[in-house]
Length: 405
Image (cartoon, rainbow, N blue to C red; front, side, top):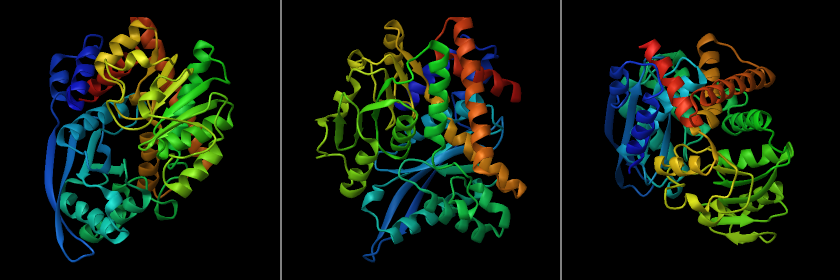
């Protein structure tokens, strides 16, 4: 199935346990709006390329649309629709007053110069400015987009609208340009707070072993933070392949190697493995932190971890969910596990709107409390209804969206 079809299956499963009227489910099956644009981008060579871009505004019952913008060659309308629905659910799970949206451009941004990347970023804002705004739709970074890109976009929005408060339209900005303390590490830090809450709830060994698929911002930061508090990272991977050392990897050394070589391939102090191999490593915790659809009904039998912590969006298909549940492998769902990013994005949006700047300590305290509370609410609901945590999370979110509607 496609990513959006997977999201709809998750929606329908949760509908059986959510105390909502059927029209709420029917509304959420359809995005409020899908906008497609052709972006003309001047290349350094003098030629002009036309790139396809999307912005999906899925649901705004709880507040302005919220969701990242990704630059990736595999961006599609279907993918962005799925991500928009997941964002609506995620914001409701985190219990923040925002809705769900998502954006993307079909492009291999690794092939663009910095100047080309800036022209693309500003072009995205020119194409979608009429549907964006601090109280309308608030984008953020996603796959292959960065704080610098958000700064370019916020600057372009202010130039086009003349609204000096318009920088609140974009979150994930650099700290000196209105960004929030803690935003760069928020997805990973929030995931770690959820994992810690789960570990306390079930009595998981604090020195448990972890494998991480994906070594971008979320996966890399999670590896660093988890190793600092005592977890043992035994395998990591990026798009080029992976590394495995059952005794534990030196995360700092792996990070330095990646920075120098731009990939993990060839790292000397570990066994080389594939991304598929990583899923089958003997470990307590598997952390998918790459793209959607990585754990499927076909390969879930390889998973040997006790628990899956989803830092990526949609890494586990509905078919895999069913089989993992039968095998008593807990899945801490993406709409909870990676909601730290959007939670601190909400903090940034609130600070910008109020003209405030919170300390790193204030941000971290608020994040830890909200993540722990969200986990406890979902864990309690899962036990009460004898359902998995993803279905429990969706059911809670649906009830909150229904109340706002």
